[in-house]
Image (cartoon, rainbow, N blue to C red):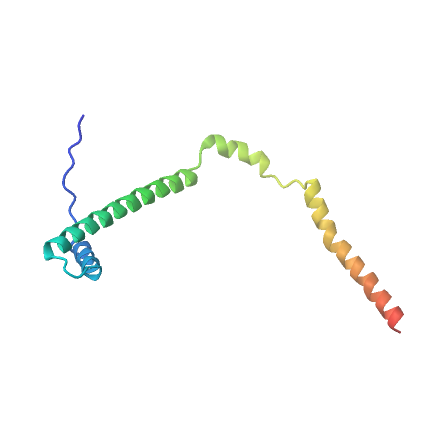
Length: 116
């Protein structure tokens, strides 16, 4: 099936922005026709940019929806893994605060004995 492309309509705001940019970059001796052609090129660029941004937003939205959509197989697999079981790494982290407390108290006692 062949798709027929309809001519993209460009909003009046985009046309005004393009003309404003074209006039701002206008060189001395440039004709109105040349400025109008430059404005048309800028319009096409803006339209292309908007089209790409819409496609990117759609792709991000699809990815976000796919991430949020729970799958039954993943839910069943995640249940056993969600039970809290301390690992060796967790145990090491729970010792660190106590170790630092003991070291600080030893340092405090040593400082008071030497300073007195």
